[in-house]
Length: 70
Image 1 (spheres, rainbow, N blue to C red):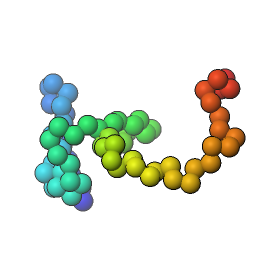
Image 2: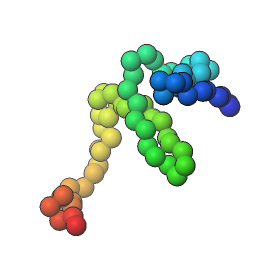
Image 3: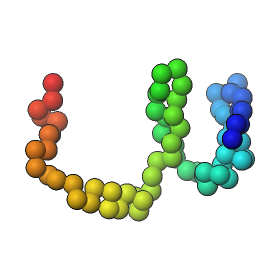
């Protein structure tokens, strides 16, 4: 699907309806902008319930903390 939007004078972009419906995005939902080269990746911030079980089976052994970073 190809969709085009225009940046307004207030630096706002309306997400086309076809994209909103396909992604099941709703009003008031939060998004994060991730810089990617000359573009940006737009991703919804996940709800807390969606993160449940995401680290199941993770090993705490050899875990690096911030104190050992340069």
